[in-house]
View (tube, helix red, strand yellow):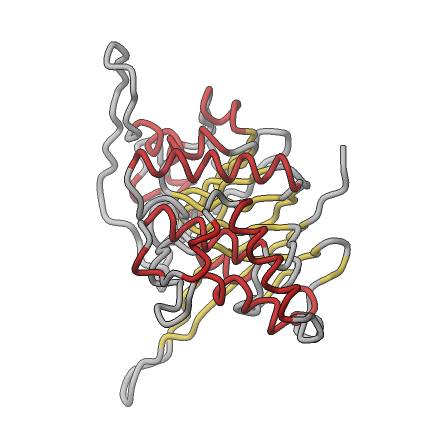
Length: 317
C-alpha cells in the first residue's frame, strides 16, 4: 500500500449570513468534520444531494477557500495559508461547466499554456508550446485544435481541454467537480474513460464529486456519502453498493435508475423538507426525514462508527 497523497482531518467550513440592519448574523454550516485519505491511483467519490457540502469540500482542498477548522496534508506537506501558493500546483480542479470555465477570448493553446506562464515564468515560449501540443494529444485532441477558440468545440472537447489545462502543472491530485453532469450520456462515457486512462498512465489521485451514483459506481474506489455538510457513510465502493448501512444512502441508491429492465427494486421516497444549513436540527440531521427515527435520534447526534464500512447512525443496517 502506497502512502496517501492527501490526508484530511475534520475539515470544517462556515459562512456568515448577514442579517441586515435589524437582523442578526447567522452561521451557515456548509461542511463539518470531513476526514479521509486518498492514495495515488485511487478515486474517492463524494456524493449527496445539492447543498450537502460537496463543492465546499472541493474549494477547501483546492485552497480556493481556507477552512475555519481542521487541516489537510498534500504530498507530505501540511497545507497552511503561507504555503498555499506552492501547494496549488499539487492539486488542480476540473469544473462542472466546460464552457463557463474556459476563457472565450483565448485560443486552446493559450488556455493550456497559461498555467505554465503563471507558475513557471522562466520557461521559454517554445517549451510551453511543445508541452501544450503534447497535452492535446494526451487528452485526445488533434494538433489543429491548438489555434481554435472554445466556441468552436463540442461540450466533450471543451471538457478535454479543461482536463488538459488541469494536468499542465503535473498535479498529484485532481478534484473533479461533477465533470460529466453537463454532457450528453454518450459523451459522458468518453470523458470517464479518458479519466480512467489518464489515472492509470499518470498515477493520479481523484477526488470525484457527483450526485450521479451510476457514474460513481463506474469510476470510484471508495465513497463518502454526505448530508447537510457531514459525512454519514464511508465505505469501499463494492461494500456500499452491495449493502447500505445508513438510511439516507439506502434512499439515494433506491432512486438510481437501473439499466436492466428485468430487475425491480423498492423506491424509498423521503418525506419532509431538507433542513436549512443555517438551522440544523439537534440530534441526527437526517431524523426529520428518516423512517427509523426515534427520540434518541432527535436528541443525540450520532458519530461515524469504526471499521472499514462506517456509518453515522444510531440504528445502522
